Length: 254
Ligand code: SAH
Image (tube, rainbow, N blue to C red; front, side, top):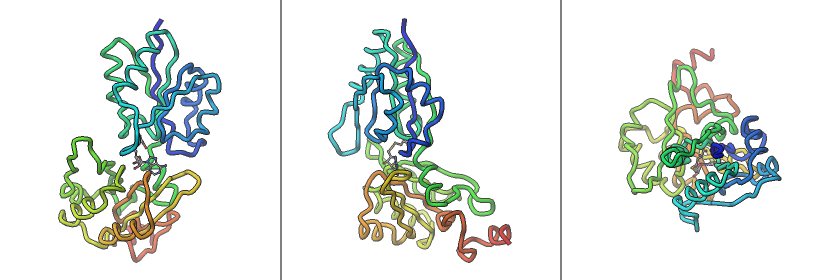
């Protein structure tokens, strides 16, 4: 009998941000393939399982995607209960969709268990609301790094009027800043950079679009980090210097 493969989001790092559904699935797993962004403390929920680390950090030695998929398939076909544990949410820059489709095409069903994606957790961890009435009507999650070397349409994002939450952005800060500035976003737009969100050693760097590259390099920003770009990034502990907000939000807060 083939059991569905669980694609589980382990959240941003803090083990308490795991869902109850994730914990239940981990308790039943026999084989756990764990990404390296997963906090090892999460593995306390599956002491019975054989854990296979399958890290894929950008630029580092990694386990090829094809190999990971074949491993999942092999164990599933052996009738084992397989869980694939990924940082954040499996379907936000996590290849969850790809893996589910690949397994489905081979007759193996998947169950996806959401996790809290790093962008949401990072903003909350330093007191930024990603949407705020009168300030930000939406949020765009975007990666600065694509496998084919392509870049996002920064000009369109600059015009979107949404808070931009940038994943995998540390190595692409100059291109990100240049693209958004050229796209018309003002140089004094607030930027917050959050390293190791929700983990011990979490750091935040407050900056602006014009200065973010200099501030990041001067303070040694390292991956994993999230960039939050937009007026809400001026918020701190959910409070704001009223003067730093556009007029409608000031009025709403009065
Ligand atoms: N599926 C994951 C994202 C994987 S892509 C999710 O939903 O969160 C890897 C990127 O996620 C990193 O380059 C970084 O931008 C971000 N990231 C993951 N964990 C993070 C953390 N604890 N703090 C800050 N950024 C993190």
